[in-house]
Image (cartoon, rainbow, N blue to C red; front, side, top):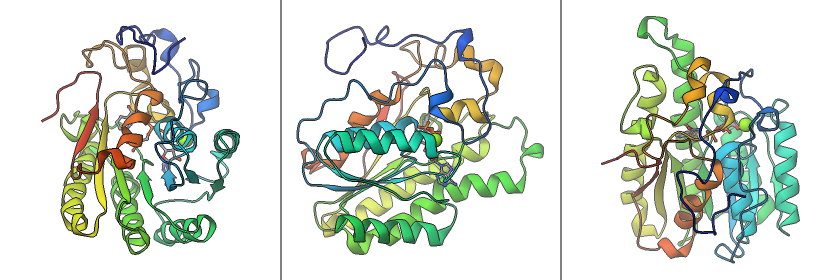
Length: 300
Ligand code: NAD
Ligand code: MG
């Protein structure tokens, strides 16, 4: 049983990809319909009071990396506001609400579309009203659709990718900052694609470069207020994002195998500890930093 506490060889901690990874769903996809199912730490993540009494907003909290982060935050003692797409993702989100409540914390589900500025503002306002404030903002929602040729990349997709990955982060940070007390943390989500852009991910990869720059600038701007801004840059991670058009389906049986020196894809449960560290007071002197969890793929 893979967990984050038993010392073991990380190359074999989780299985490598095989033919069973080849699958497709309509976007945004459901984690509960994936097989093999990603590990978001549901039965492994153990809290140790690192975020006691904290108030967190997590976007993309229904599945994948956001789900793992929401579970970890709750088990570390935080109340969590969960953002995800209504209707399509409700089934995954229900499970996360239950897991947060089982951890003895408050879960407030606020589904909506982060490409809508009014929703982003309402999400923060609801968090402040329901939790009595906010001191962690984890921007994890993201859109990735592969496209091999700039001539086939539609304005609509380019716009949606930027709205989801970049504009939503801007709107959410802007809405949150007036409410964030000193000691608060913003954590944005980049990618190995923000350092090594794949030719088939022109729009997506370039949003991740934007996220890197935005986060370093905002970190410098907010440091005097005692608000830290950091980034997690995942490598290839087994999540719904990849089976709804993030990768060409025929590439999935090798997902993470050749590009990551670890020889396998990462699991969401292996990302959550980075989001916990950057949210907690343990990282009090860390801001404008990127924590890469890439299975050994080098970043600058
Ligand atoms: P995921 O599909 O589980 O999570 C993405 C989430 O984004 C969805 O669950 C959905 O709730 C949310 N989302 C997308 N569009 C939205 C919209 N318009 N409104 C509201 N919510 C919306 O996949 P994941 O891999 O866990 O992705 C989480 C983050 O990790 C993304 O930012 C992604 O770019 C990043 N990332 C993933 C990988 C990987 O290999 N899986 C690698 C690097 C970075
Ligand atoms: Mg989802």
